Image (cartoon, rainbow, N blue to C red):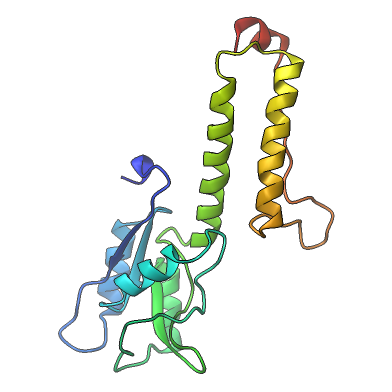
Length: 192
């Protein structure tokens, strides 16, 4: 289903365990079957609604990592450091009680171990380019049209940069994005 997700991210949670403490091995096995950059599997059981609510209420480029969850009761156990490492290596999004934060997301990742906010930002960029490019389908493939397309994409990515979704490299040598709209002579002649 991840290929058909159309920029949607699914949410799930590990199955409840007879004891209060989750079965880490069962959770890892469950995540192994669900590996996708389009699926978030939260642990422990009972946290998925709060996680989905947190993420849906955030700007697409904001990370849910170390963000406090609302509307859930603190688990009656703490994950050990080893438990957290195992869950994160398996691609689960762990929720635990943190000092001064309360019940919070430990790391906002999908089951592919990709960060949720990075995936959502990439989705937004792709959707934006697709929505702009559709206006140019059927138009003559010449330098004026390519320049107009480039300017519109550049404008959209500048807006994403201003809101903080796209940032330059840490060393400042690479810009937040690069846009190039080109066509070979053969592509232009073929109307591509």
